[in-house]
Image (cartoon, rainbow, N blue to C red; front, side, top):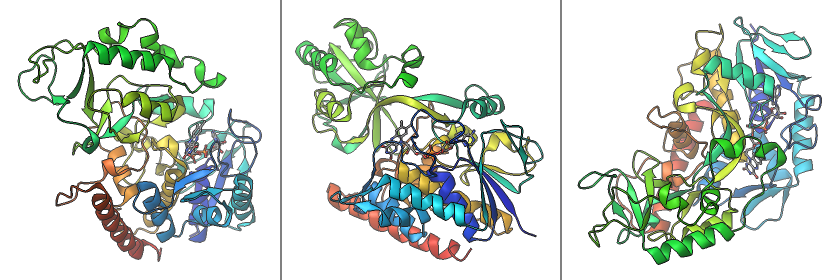
Length: 457
Ligand SMILES: Cc1cc2nc3c(=O)[nH]c(=O)nc-3n(C[C@H](O)[C@H](O)[C@H](O)COP(=O)(O)OP(=O)(O)OC[C@H]3O[C@@H](n4cnc5c(N)ncnc54)[C@H](O)[C@@H]3O)c2cc1C
Protein backbone atom coordinates (compact mmCIF):
# COMPACT_ATOMS: atom_id res chain seq x y z
CA UNK A 1 0.00 0.00 0.00
CA UNK A 2 1.27 3.50 -0.78
CA UNK A 3 2.25 5.50 2.29
CA UNK A 4 1.65 9.20 2.78
CA UNK A 5 3.52 11.57 5.06
CA UNK A 6 2.52 15.11 6.00
CA UNK A 7 5.22 17.73 6.47
CA UNK A 8 4.33 21.01 8.14
CA UNK A 9 6.55 23.81 6.80
CA UNK A 10 8.28 24.05 3.41
CA UNK A 11 11.45 25.65 4.75
CA UNK A 12 14.93 24.14 4.53
CA UNK A 13 14.18 21.04 6.63
CA UNK A 14 10.67 20.44 5.27
CA UNK A 15 11.67 20.81 1.60
CA UNK A 16 14.63 18.42 1.91
CA UNK A 17 12.49 15.88 3.79
CA UNK A 18 9.75 16.11 1.14
CA UNK A 19 12.13 15.53 -1.79
CA UNK A 20 13.88 12.63 -0.02
CA UNK A 21 10.60 10.89 0.83
CA UNK A 22 9.18 11.48 -2.64
CA UNK A 23 12.35 10.02 -4.21
CA UNK A 24 11.59 6.88 -2.18
CA UNK A 25 8.05 6.76 -3.59
CA UNK A 26 6.35 7.93 -0.42
CA UNK A 27 3.57 10.43 -1.08
CA UNK A 28 4.02 13.78 0.65
CA UNK A 29 1.57 16.52 1.58
CA UNK A 30 3.74 19.55 2.26
CA UNK A 31 1.80 22.27 4.09
CA UNK A 32 3.25 25.78 3.90
CA UNK A 33 1.64 28.80 5.59
CA UNK A 34 3.16 31.43 3.28
CA UNK A 35 2.06 33.48 1.39
CA UNK A 36 -1.34 33.46 3.17
CA UNK A 37 0.37 33.93 6.53
CA UNK A 38 3.63 35.87 6.39
CA UNK A 39 6.45 35.46 8.92
CA UNK A 40 8.33 38.55 10.13
CA UNK A 41 11.45 37.60 8.12
CA UNK A 42 10.50 35.64 4.99
CA UNK A 43 10.17 37.94 1.95
CA UNK A 44 8.96 35.55 -0.79
CA UNK A 45 6.58 32.62 -1.11
CA UNK A 46 9.39 30.29 -2.24
CA UNK A 47 10.04 27.06 -0.42
CA UNK A 48 13.43 26.94 1.36
CA UNK A 49 13.93 30.70 1.51
CA UNK A 50 17.17 31.73 3.25
CA UNK A 51 15.96 34.32 5.73
CA UNK A 52 19.20 36.13 6.46
CA UNK A 53 22.76 35.54 5.23
CA UNK A 54 23.24 33.87 1.83
CA UNK A 55 26.22 31.91 3.16
CA UNK A 56 26.05 28.25 4.09
CA UNK A 57 29.50 28.67 5.68
CA UNK A 58 32.82 26.91 5.12
CA UNK A 59 33.27 23.96 2.79
CA UNK A 60 36.59 22.90 4.30
CA UNK A 61 36.36 19.52 5.95
CA UNK A 62 38.71 20.55 8.75
CA UNK A 63 35.71 22.47 10.16
CA UNK A 64 32.39 21.13 11.44
CA UNK A 65 30.59 23.39 8.93
CA UNK A 66 32.55 21.75 6.11
CA UNK A 67 31.94 18.25 7.47
CA UNK A 68 28.18 18.69 7.53
CA UNK A 69 28.42 19.46 3.79
CA UNK A 70 30.40 16.28 3.32
CA UNK A 71 27.52 14.44 5.05
CA UNK A 72 24.95 16.17 2.85
CA UNK A 73 26.90 15.18 -0.21
CA UNK A 74 27.42 11.57 0.96
CA UNK A 75 23.73 11.17 1.64
CA UNK A 76 22.77 12.85 -1.65
CA UNK A 77 20.95 15.89 -0.32
CA UNK A 78 18.77 17.63 -2.88
CA UNK A 79 19.07 21.08 -1.32
CA UNK A 80 22.85 20.80 -1.10
CA UNK A 81 22.84 19.99 -4.82
CA UNK A 82 20.74 23.10 -5.56
CA UNK A 83 23.07 25.17 -3.38
CA UNK A 84 26.09 24.02 -5.41
CA UNK A 85 24.25 24.85 -8.65
CA UNK A 86 23.34 28.35 -7.44
CA UNK A 87 26.64 29.21 -5.78
CA UNK A 88 28.24 32.65 -5.98
CA UNK A 89 31.95 33.34 -5.29
CA UNK A 90 32.70 33.46 -1.54
CA UNK A 91 36.25 32.18 -0.96
CA UNK A 92 36.25 28.99 1.10
CA UNK A 93 32.55 29.29 1.90
CA UNK A 94 29.49 28.06 0.04
CA UNK A 95 27.34 31.12 -0.66
CA UNK A 96 24.36 31.06 -2.99
CA UNK A 97 22.15 33.32 -5.05
CA UNK A 98 19.23 33.04 -2.66
CA UNK A 99 16.54 33.51 -5.32
CA UNK A 100 18.02 30.99 -7.75
CA UNK A 101 18.43 28.53 -4.87
CA UNK A 102 14.90 28.87 -3.48
CA UNK A 103 13.33 28.96 -6.96
CA UNK A 104 15.05 25.68 -7.91
CA UNK A 105 13.83 24.01 -4.72
CA UNK A 106 10.29 25.31 -5.26
CA UNK A 107 10.19 24.07 -8.86
CA UNK A 108 11.47 20.63 -7.86
CA UNK A 109 8.73 20.41 -5.25
CA UNK A 110 5.95 21.76 -7.43
CA UNK A 111 6.88 19.46 -10.32
CA UNK A 112 7.29 16.27 -8.28
CA UNK A 113 4.43 13.83 -8.92
CA UNK A 114 4.66 12.46 -5.35
CA UNK A 115 4.46 15.89 -3.63
CA UNK A 116 1.32 17.92 -3.08
CA UNK A 117 2.20 21.47 -1.94
CA UNK A 118 -0.66 22.89 0.13
CA UNK A 119 -0.64 26.60 0.90
CA UNK A 120 -2.32 26.78 4.33
CA UNK A 121 -1.50 27.26 8.01
CA UNK A 122 -1.47 23.97 9.94
CA UNK A 123 -2.81 24.54 13.43
CA UNK A 124 -3.03 21.11 15.04
CA UNK A 125 -2.52 17.39 14.64
CA UNK A 126 -5.42 15.13 15.54
CA UNK A 127 -5.33 11.85 17.43
CA UNK A 128 -6.01 9.84 14.27
CA UNK A 129 -3.04 11.36 12.40
CA UNK A 130 -4.76 14.17 10.46
CA UNK A 131 -3.64 17.79 10.23
CA UNK A 132 -6.12 20.65 10.64
CA UNK A 133 -5.58 24.03 9.04
CA UNK A 134 -6.76 27.51 9.99
CA UNK A 135 -8.90 27.74 6.82
CA UNK A 136 -10.99 24.80 8.11
CA UNK A 137 -9.41 22.23 5.78
CA UNK A 138 -8.48 18.88 7.26
CA UNK A 139 -5.89 16.59 5.61
CA UNK A 140 -5.05 12.96 6.27
CA UNK A 141 -4.94 10.57 7.97
CA UNK A 142 -1.22 10.15 7.29
CA UNK A 143 1.23 7.37 8.13
CA UNK A 144 3.61 9.85 9.76
CA UNK A 145 3.79 13.60 10.33
CA UNK A 146 6.82 15.91 10.44
CA UNK A 147 6.73 19.27 12.19
CA UNK A 148 9.29 21.45 10.38
CA UNK A 149 7.73 24.84 10.97
CA UNK A 150 10.98 26.56 11.95
CA UNK A 151 12.02 29.29 14.37
CA UNK A 152 9.02 31.43 13.39
CA UNK A 153 6.34 28.76 13.76
CA UNK A 154 2.91 30.39 13.49
CA UNK A 155 1.26 31.39 16.74
CA UNK A 156 -1.65 28.93 16.52
CA UNK A 157 0.57 25.92 15.90
CA UNK A 158 3.01 27.06 18.61
CA UNK A 159 0.11 27.39 21.06
CA UNK A 160 -1.03 23.88 20.24
CA UNK A 161 2.50 22.50 20.69
CA UNK A 162 2.73 24.35 23.99
CA UNK A 163 -0.47 22.68 25.18
CA UNK A 164 0.87 19.26 24.23
CA UNK A 165 4.36 19.65 25.66
CA UNK A 166 3.74 21.88 28.69
CA UNK A 167 5.14 25.34 29.36
CA UNK A 168 8.69 24.04 29.88
CA UNK A 169 8.58 22.27 26.53
CA UNK A 170 8.53 25.17 24.10
CA UNK A 171 10.66 28.32 24.06
CA UNK A 172 10.00 31.43 22.04
CA UNK A 173 13.35 33.13 22.44
CA UNK A 174 16.90 31.98 22.19
CA UNK A 175 18.87 33.82 24.85
CA UNK A 176 22.15 31.98 24.86
CA UNK A 177 25.51 32.82 26.39
CA UNK A 178 28.69 32.35 24.33
CA UNK A 179 30.44 29.00 24.46
CA UNK A 180 34.23 28.67 24.24
CA UNK A 181 36.56 25.74 23.66
CA UNK A 182 38.21 24.50 26.85
CA UNK A 183 41.55 24.03 25.11
CA UNK A 184 41.68 27.73 24.27
CA UNK A 185 41.49 28.86 27.94
CA UNK A 186 44.51 29.93 29.99
CA UNK A 187 44.49 27.63 33.03
CA UNK A 188 47.29 29.57 34.67
CA UNK A 189 44.71 32.27 35.38
CA UNK A 190 41.45 30.30 35.44
CA UNK A 191 40.78 28.05 38.43
CA UNK A 192 38.37 25.21 39.08
CA UNK A 193 36.03 25.73 42.06
CA UNK A 194 32.37 25.70 43.00
CA UNK A 195 31.14 28.56 45.16
CA UNK A 196 31.57 27.99 48.93
CA UNK A 197 33.09 24.56 48.33
CA UNK A 198 36.56 23.34 49.27
CA UNK A 199 38.85 21.89 46.60
CA UNK A 200 38.12 21.46 42.91
CA UNK A 201 34.52 22.05 41.90
CA UNK A 202 32.55 21.77 38.71
CA UNK A 203 32.98 25.37 37.56
CA UNK A 204 35.88 27.18 35.97
CA UNK A 205 36.35 30.73 37.31
CA UNK A 206 37.99 33.65 35.55
CA UNK A 207 39.04 36.12 38.31
CA UNK A 208 39.32 39.90 37.76
CA UNK A 209 41.42 42.47 39.57
CA UNK A 210 39.62 45.78 40.07
CA UNK A 211 41.47 47.42 37.15
CA UNK A 212 40.76 44.51 34.81
CA UNK A 213 37.12 44.55 35.82
CA UNK A 214 36.64 48.27 35.22
CA UNK A 215 38.33 48.12 31.81
CA UNK A 216 36.11 45.17 30.88
CA UNK A 217 32.86 46.85 31.97
CA UNK A 218 33.72 50.07 30.12
CA UNK A 219 34.34 48.15 26.90
CA UNK A 220 31.21 46.07 27.45
CA UNK A 221 28.87 49.03 27.71
CA UNK A 222 30.34 50.83 24.70
CA UNK A 223 30.52 47.78 22.40
CA UNK A 224 28.41 47.58 19.23
CA UNK A 225 25.13 45.73 19.71
CA UNK A 226 22.80 43.96 17.32
CA UNK A 227 19.64 46.00 17.30
CA UNK A 228 16.70 43.78 18.13
CA UNK A 229 14.04 43.70 15.44
CA UNK A 230 10.66 45.12 16.46
CA UNK A 231 9.13 41.67 16.59
CA UNK A 232 11.92 40.54 18.89
CA UNK A 233 12.08 43.35 21.43
CA UNK A 234 8.63 42.61 22.88
CA UNK A 235 9.03 40.64 26.15
CA UNK A 236 12.56 39.61 25.29
CA UNK A 237 14.47 41.58 27.88
CA UNK A 238 11.89 41.01 30.59
CA UNK A 239 12.65 37.32 30.72
CA UNK A 240 16.38 37.56 30.52
CA UNK A 241 18.73 40.55 30.82
CA UNK A 242 21.72 40.76 28.48
CA UNK A 243 25.01 41.18 30.37
CA UNK A 244 25.65 44.58 28.74
CA UNK A 245 22.24 45.83 29.96
CA UNK A 246 23.08 44.76 33.52
CA UNK A 247 26.43 46.60 33.23
CA UNK A 248 24.67 49.72 32.00
CA UNK A 249 22.83 49.96 35.33
CA UNK A 250 26.08 50.79 37.09
CA UNK A 251 29.70 49.67 37.11
CA UNK A 252 29.19 47.39 40.10
CA UNK A 253 25.89 45.85 38.98
CA UNK A 254 27.50 42.78 37.30
CA UNK A 255 29.65 42.25 40.44
CA UNK A 256 26.42 41.77 42.37
CA UNK A 257 24.94 39.67 39.58
CA UNK A 258 26.53 37.15 37.19
CA UNK A 259 30.10 38.25 38.03
CA UNK A 260 29.75 38.01 41.81
CA UNK A 261 32.91 36.70 43.48
CA UNK A 262 31.34 35.54 46.76
CA UNK A 263 32.28 32.06 47.90
CA UNK A 264 35.34 31.95 45.60
CA UNK A 265 39.02 32.01 46.57
CA UNK A 266 41.65 32.52 43.89
CA UNK A 267 44.36 29.91 44.66
CA UNK A 268 47.03 32.23 43.22
CA UNK A 269 46.35 35.01 45.76
CA UNK A 270 44.50 33.11 48.52
CA UNK A 271 41.87 35.89 48.33
CA UNK A 272 38.41 36.49 46.95
CA UNK A 273 38.75 38.13 43.49
CA UNK A 274 37.18 41.53 42.78
CA UNK A 275 34.78 39.84 40.38
CA UNK A 276 34.70 36.52 38.51
CA UNK A 277 33.12 35.00 35.44
CA UNK A 278 32.00 31.43 35.99
CA UNK A 279 32.18 28.92 33.16
CA UNK A 280 30.06 25.77 33.15
CA UNK A 281 30.78 22.65 31.11
CA UNK A 282 28.59 22.45 28.04
CA UNK A 283 29.21 18.83 27.12
CA UNK A 284 29.84 15.67 29.17
CA UNK A 285 33.51 15.59 28.14
CA UNK A 286 34.28 19.17 29.21
CA UNK A 287 35.49 20.18 25.75
CA UNK A 288 33.46 23.38 25.74
CA UNK A 289 32.26 25.80 28.43
CA UNK A 290 29.58 28.48 28.52
CA UNK A 291 29.99 31.85 30.21
CA UNK A 292 27.34 31.70 32.92
CA UNK A 293 24.84 34.59 32.77
CA UNK A 294 26.40 36.09 29.65
CA UNK A 295 23.44 36.11 27.28
CA UNK A 296 24.18 39.08 25.08
CA UNK A 297 23.15 41.19 22.16
CA UNK A 298 26.68 42.28 21.20
CA UNK A 299 27.67 41.89 17.54
CA UNK A 300 29.76 38.72 17.02
CA UNK A 301 33.14 40.46 16.35
CA UNK A 302 32.53 42.60 19.46
CA UNK A 303 31.95 39.48 21.55
CA UNK A 304 35.40 38.23 20.49
CA UNK A 305 37.04 41.57 21.26
CA UNK A 306 35.34 42.30 24.58
CA UNK A 307 35.08 38.80 26.08
CA UNK A 308 38.78 38.21 25.38
CA UNK A 309 39.41 40.95 27.98
CA UNK A 310 38.25 38.46 30.62
CA UNK A 311 41.39 37.13 32.36
CA UNK A 312 42.14 33.65 31.02
CA UNK A 313 40.04 34.14 27.89
CA UNK A 314 42.62 36.19 25.98
CA UNK A 315 42.93 33.48 23.29
CA UNK A 316 39.39 32.11 23.62
CA UNK A 317 37.97 30.37 20.56
CA UNK A 318 34.21 30.56 20.29
CA UNK A 319 32.13 27.45 19.71
CA UNK A 320 29.11 29.71 19.35
CA UNK A 321 28.45 33.35 20.08
CA UNK A 322 25.81 34.63 22.48
CA UNK A 323 22.46 35.45 20.91
CA UNK A 324 19.13 36.93 21.88
CA UNK A 325 16.55 36.56 19.17
CA UNK A 326 13.13 35.22 18.39
CA UNK A 327 13.32 31.45 18.03
CA UNK A 328 10.64 28.85 18.61
CA UNK A 329 12.18 25.55 19.64
CA UNK A 330 11.23 22.51 21.64
CA UNK A 331 13.11 21.21 24.66
CA UNK A 332 14.74 18.46 22.62
CA UNK A 333 16.60 16.73 25.50
CA UNK A 334 13.26 15.89 27.09
CA UNK A 335 11.00 15.67 24.07
CA UNK A 336 12.90 14.24 21.12
CA UNK A 337 14.26 10.76 20.47
CA UNK A 338 17.43 10.05 18.47
CA UNK A 339 15.23 9.23 15.48
CA UNK A 340 13.78 12.77 15.79
CA UNK A 341 10.41 11.54 16.98
CA UNK A 342 8.39 13.85 19.25
CA UNK A 343 8.11 11.77 22.41
CA UNK A 344 5.36 13.94 23.93
CA UNK A 345 2.87 12.93 21.21
CA UNK A 346 3.47 9.17 21.34
CA UNK A 347 0.43 8.48 23.50
CA UNK A 348 -1.70 11.17 21.91
CA UNK A 349 -1.36 10.41 18.21
CA UNK A 350 -1.89 7.06 16.48
CA UNK A 351 0.96 7.73 14.03
CA UNK A 352 4.51 8.89 14.78
CA UNK A 353 5.13 12.65 14.79
CA UNK A 354 8.68 13.74 13.98
CA UNK A 355 10.59 17.01 14.25
CA UNK A 356 13.04 18.51 11.79
CA UNK A 357 14.96 21.77 11.57
CA UNK A 358 15.20 24.61 13.99
CA UNK A 359 12.03 23.70 15.92
CA UNK A 360 13.90 20.57 17.06
CA UNK A 361 16.39 22.78 18.86
CA UNK A 362 19.27 22.85 16.42
CA UNK A 363 20.55 25.93 14.65
CA UNK A 364 21.78 26.77 11.15
CA UNK A 365 20.88 26.39 7.49
CA UNK A 366 22.90 23.24 6.80
CA UNK A 367 21.78 21.71 10.09
CA UNK A 368 18.14 22.23 9.05
CA UNK A 369 18.73 20.63 5.63
CA UNK A 370 20.58 17.74 7.27
CA UNK A 371 17.72 17.28 9.77
CA UNK A 372 15.20 17.08 6.94
CA UNK A 373 17.32 14.47 5.18
CA UNK A 374 17.75 12.43 8.36
CA UNK A 375 14.07 12.48 9.26
CA UNK A 376 13.23 11.16 5.77
CA UNK A 377 15.65 8.26 6.30
CA UNK A 378 14.18 7.53 9.74
CA UNK A 379 10.60 7.61 8.43
CA UNK A 380 11.45 5.41 5.46
CA UNK A 381 13.00 2.77 7.74
CA UNK A 382 9.95 2.94 10.01
CA UNK A 383 7.39 2.72 7.19
CA UNK A 384 9.19 -0.21 5.58
CA UNK A 385 9.47 -2.06 8.89
CA UNK A 386 13.26 -2.08 8.55
CA UNK A 387 15.49 -2.37 11.60
CA UNK A 388 16.72 1.16 12.30
CA UNK A 389 20.37 1.85 11.43
CA UNK A 390 21.55 4.20 14.18
CA UNK A 391 23.36 7.33 13.03
CA UNK A 392 26.91 7.15 14.47
CA UNK A 393 27.62 9.90 17.06
CA UNK A 394 31.07 10.30 15.46
CA UNK A 395 29.43 12.05 12.50
CA UNK A 396 28.89 15.81 12.95
CA UNK A 397 25.11 15.61 12.76
CA UNK A 398 25.12 12.44 14.90
CA UNK A 399 27.08 14.37 17.55
CA UNK A 400 24.58 17.24 17.36
CA UNK A 401 21.65 14.83 17.76
CA UNK A 402 23.34 13.15 20.73
CA UNK A 403 23.86 16.55 22.30
CA UNK A 404 20.31 17.71 21.59
CA UNK A 405 18.74 14.52 22.96
CA UNK A 406 20.93 14.11 26.04
CA UNK A 407 18.42 14.08 28.94
CA UNK A 408 21.10 15.40 31.34
CA UNK A 409 21.26 18.73 29.49
CA UNK A 410 19.62 21.48 31.55
CA UNK A 411 18.29 24.78 30.16
CA UNK A 412 18.78 23.56 26.62
CA UNK A 413 19.68 26.20 24.05
CA UNK A 414 19.89 25.50 20.30
CA UNK A 415 23.27 24.50 18.96
CA UNK A 416 24.95 24.15 15.57
CA UNK A 417 27.46 21.47 14.63
CA UNK A 418 30.91 21.94 16.20
CA UNK A 419 33.91 19.94 17.34
CA UNK A 420 33.23 20.78 21.02
CA UNK A 421 30.32 18.30 21.15
CA UNK A 422 32.00 15.46 19.21
CA UNK A 423 32.85 12.35 21.26
CA UNK A 424 36.52 12.73 22.30
CA UNK A 425 39.17 10.87 20.32
CA UNK A 426 40.55 7.71 21.91
CA UNK A 427 43.98 9.35 22.15
CA UNK A 428 45.11 12.89 22.96
CA UNK A 429 46.31 15.08 20.10
CA UNK A 430 47.66 18.38 21.42
CA UNK A 431 48.05 20.13 18.08
CA UNK A 432 44.68 21.68 17.20
CA UNK A 433 45.02 21.31 13.44
CA UNK A 434 45.92 17.65 13.77
CA UNK A 435 43.13 17.06 16.29
CA UNK A 436 40.51 18.57 13.96
CA UNK A 437 41.90 16.54 11.08
CA UNK A 438 41.49 13.39 13.20
CA UNK A 439 37.87 14.32 14.05
CA UNK A 440 37.25 14.92 10.36
CA UNK A 441 38.74 11.58 9.24
CA UNK A 442 36.68 9.72 11.83
CA UNK A 443 33.49 11.60 10.92
CA UNK A 444 33.88 11.06 7.17
CA UNK A 445 34.55 7.34 7.62
CA UNK A 446 31.50 7.03 9.88
CA UNK A 447 29.13 8.83 7.50
CA UNK A 448 30.36 6.88 4.47
CA UNK A 449 29.68 3.66 6.34
CA UNK A 450 26.24 4.90 7.40
CA UNK A 451 25.45 6.01 3.84
CA UNK A 452 26.34 2.56 2.52
CA UNK A 453 23.66 1.10 4.83
CA UNK A 454 20.83 3.55 4.13
CA UNK A 455 21.26 4.86 0.59
CA UNK A 456 19.59 1.85 -0.99
CA UNK A 457 16.38 2.71 0.90
C1 LIG B 1 15.90 35.97 11.93
C2 LIG B 1 16.70 34.72 11.70
C3 LIG B 1 17.90 34.79 11.00
C4 LIG B 1 18.66 33.62 10.79
N1 LIG B 1 19.83 33.70 10.10
C5 LIG B 1 20.57 32.59 9.86
C6 LIG B 1 21.78 32.67 9.10
O1 LIG B 1 22.17 33.72 8.62
N2 LIG B 1 22.50 31.52 8.91
C7 LIG B 1 22.08 30.32 9.42
O2 LIG B 1 22.77 29.30 9.21
N3 LIG B 1 20.94 30.23 10.13
C8 LIG B 1 20.18 31.33 10.37
N4 LIG B 1 19.01 31.25 11.11
C9 LIG B 1 18.66 29.98 11.72
C10 LIG B 1 18.08 28.87 10.82
O3 LIG B 1 19.14 28.28 10.14
C11 LIG B 1 17.07 29.29 9.82
O4 LIG B 1 16.00 29.88 10.49
C12 LIG B 1 16.55 28.10 8.96
O5 LIG B 1 15.75 28.61 7.93
C13 LIG B 1 15.79 27.07 9.74
O6 LIG B 1 15.25 26.10 8.86
P1 LIG B 1 13.84 25.41 9.16
O7 LIG B 1 13.56 24.53 8.01
O8 LIG B 1 13.86 24.83 10.51
O9 LIG B 1 12.82 26.63 9.20
P2 LIG B 1 12.35 27.62 8.02
O10 LIG B 1 13.34 27.61 6.91
O11 LIG B 1 12.00 28.90 8.67
O12 LIG B 1 11.02 26.91 7.49
C14 LIG B 1 9.86 26.80 8.25
C15 LIG B 1 8.67 27.00 7.34
O13 LIG B 1 7.49 26.67 8.05
C16 LIG B 1 6.48 27.60 7.71
N5 LIG B 1 5.47 27.59 8.78
C17 LIG B 1 5.53 28.13 10.03
N6 LIG B 1 4.42 27.83 10.72
C18 LIG B 1 3.63 27.08 9.91
C19 LIG B 1 2.37 26.47 10.04
N7 LIG B 1 1.67 26.59 11.16
N8 LIG B 1 1.84 25.78 9.00
C20 LIG B 1 2.53 25.65 7.83
N9 LIG B 1 3.76 26.23 7.65
C21 LIG B 1 4.31 26.92 8.67
C22 LIG B 1 7.22 28.90 7.52
O14 LIG B 1 6.49 29.79 6.70
C23 LIG B 1 8.52 28.42 6.86
O15 LIG B 1 8.43 28.43 5.45
C24 LIG B 1 18.23 32.37 11.32
C25 LIG B 1 17.01 32.32 12.03
C26 LIG B 1 16.26 33.48 12.21
C27 LIG B 1 14.98 33.40 12.96
